[in-house]
Length: 295
Image 1 (cartoon, one colour):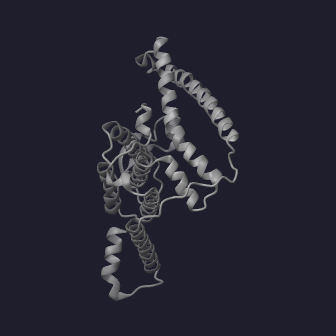
Image 2 (cartoon, one colour):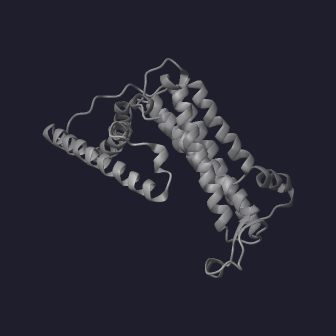
Image 3 (tube, helix red, strand yellow):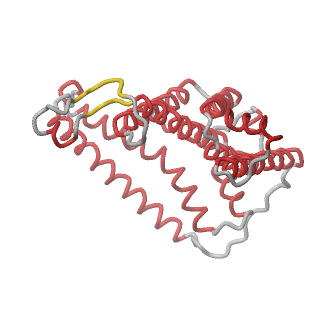
């Protein structure tokens, strides 16, 4: 996880590596829009499985699969746990009581701490959304050269400063993990033992002893980078290297996916209108049932 090469894009001969960077950015944005529009757990699960299959097509290394699983599982656990404990909508079905209301002080303040079934379900749906977007984002980062991403963004007339800062943020992510490895190695050489940091006091102390050196080293790198880009004329009108023409089949696929997303938006509007009694056509009953099941 702390290996810098795990986070940086690597060349490959797979279909996703050969795709134009503009196509991958458009597909990522459209699939992210689809994830936000859809409420059906079935379709969200299918989209999540599709994003995992794309990593298989890209032949992600075992180290990258481990990183992906750690982040996805942490997101699922955090989303389901938080929603299960703090779900405020009605109806709510209590499946467990962690803290009864009769508990002194805390019980009176909180009214009891419960785990709600509807909260678990709602948290799982939100975790599918965040997990799908995280998986697609990592896929784009691992299969696309940052320079090509910057040139693609500039070809769409994105301000140079915004595009440069976005790509710099992506390039700095591996640097942060590399600095974390250096700091942890230095602490181990000084006698740091992770098993001794299990107590709350030691855990907080260790966290601060690790965080501050990482921030200091990252700040020094950022200052060096700022001086470097300033000396090379950051923000000036520099002619950009022209991009190769966008392949026709890829552009056609992106347009087709855009039409699908627009169709989903239209169906969501129709469903909202008929739900509020503003537009209901009896002959569309089968369409309403499909939208209720899958959208």
